[in-house]
Image 1 (tube, rainbow, N blue to C red):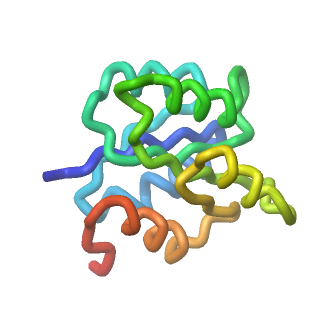
Image 2 (image 1 turned 30 degrees about the vertical axis):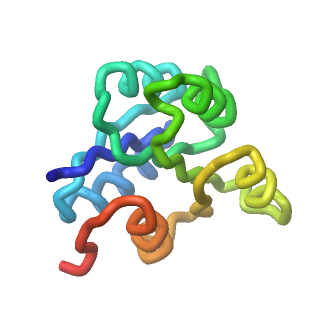
Length: 127
């Protein structure tokens, strides 16, 4: 079974990187470039296995998207990994205390990303 990952990232360079890192591993990456598009993609895809969620998004930010995910019965159990450049002391702890499943700092290190994802879904990340 191919897993679907929703990647929510407003920076097209970062989105291209996420897609390039994940697509070789038999993972379907669904791209959303803002919070509204993320919620739309979630309503259209009931079989998403994991969400990679940028915090600094235009429109509604990643925190608000996360709250809406956790308050929606059909979405609330999907693991959500925060991806953010706001990696200052205390930010990770704050996000984790809100209920995010995990945290990946920017710039994205592929090994950190792979290790975090494989905690939630099974995939062979060694080509």
